[in-house]
Length: 370
Image 1 (spheres, rainbow, N blue to C red):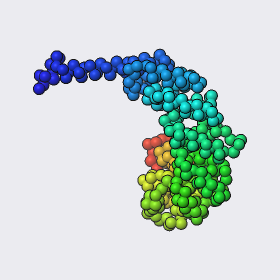
Image 2: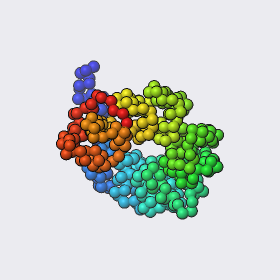
Image 3: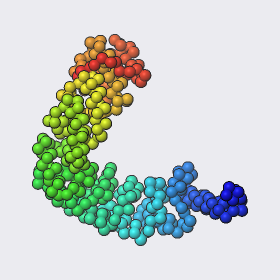
Image 4: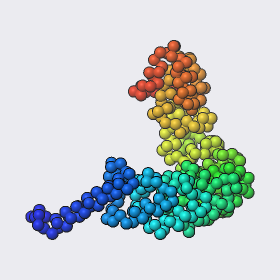
């Protein structure tokens, strides 16, 4: 058997070698096409070519020409292909109606180029089931002074098309009936459109629950709270609440924190537990302290919390700072922190900047309260 495999004249080895040569040839062809037609840098072309198999340039040429017809330059097309290489083999007969529909409905010229370059996958959405109904919905919802193109070219603006559901309009009407401002509705449409895809009756229940918790429907946190509740099943909510309870929190305290900072529940149980353990067990904070400065739960330990706590601990030990300043000191900007808590005390503690910047120095073990 092994002699057969090693025999240079064996049929199996010839087939394998042929396939290797064919694959290498196809990759070389793809690299040449990407560099010569779209201006790819050779290194980038080699990376992208691995996902392509250009045996004939007929289809890629047709796709490239179609994009050019709608105002895309080679650098734009190169950006699109680098993000979504298989688009070179899309059927122009399917692509063109989508590009034309966007052009006919307020997303044309540079806006169309920006939108597709940012999110090429938008052209994979169904014209009939996603693109047409979502644009029709936007036309009905948006105020007359708000252009569709400004929404779709904004950051994450195309999410609405990807996540479109026919439940959106009744759910928007429910938000309006609860007194939610149009600006907040537009915000949830662009940032969290999946929340509006909920079953209409379930969505009404979520709004009722949010208001019972204490959310103000006219505040921006209301939208984040609604999304968080939509995104979590009951079991997941209870699991995260139990993490807080393990540190002595009551249900009411958890809800109060959630109303103040609803994005806390976007994190996993482990991600919630780590900062709670640090602030409450190591630094001796109470739940009231965490609730007063909920942003600390999102901060990077390595880059912000530990370095700043080293400085603050030293200042407190030398009676130069009250422990009540700790919460605020953790959330202010880097420039403010250095100015207020490092530079201001360097004459009294010359090594303070070194303490702040030295990652090899650990946090003192003694507890520090807010």
